[in-house]
Image (cartoon, rainbow, N blue to C red; front, side, top):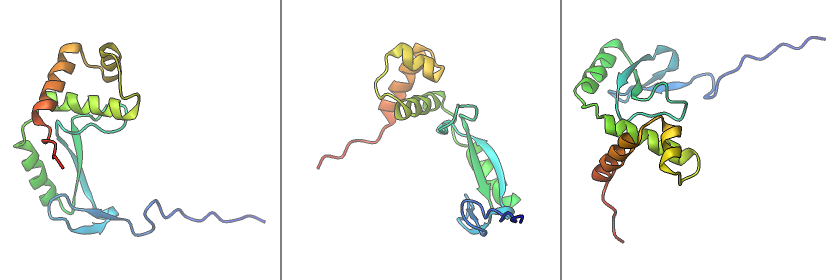
Length: 130
C-alpha cells in the first residue's frame, strides 16, 4: 500500500507571519515584499557573498520604497563592514588568530584589519561599571 506524503507546513507552521520593517505590522509570509539595501553593518553568517547588503521586508511596495530611502541616507562606512567581517570570523571559530590567519579568513589585508579594529574601538558602547 502506498502512503501519501503530507505537505510540509514549513518551519513556522501553515500560517507563517512576516513583520514589516517600517510599520511593524504582521502579515502572511506570501504577501511580503522584499528587497536588499546597502548597509555596512550587515555581515551574515554565511560565506560573505551578501556582506554589505541587508534584506528588508515590507507589507507593501510603498513601505519598501520608504525603507530603501531611509537606507539611502545612512552612511556606508567601509571600516564598519570590515569590523563586521572580523566579528563573524572571531565568533564562528577560534577567538584568537594571528593577523595572517585573520586576513586569510576575512579576505582583508592588514591595513584594512587595523582600520576596522580602530573603527570598532572608537564606536563600541562604553562598558558599564557595576
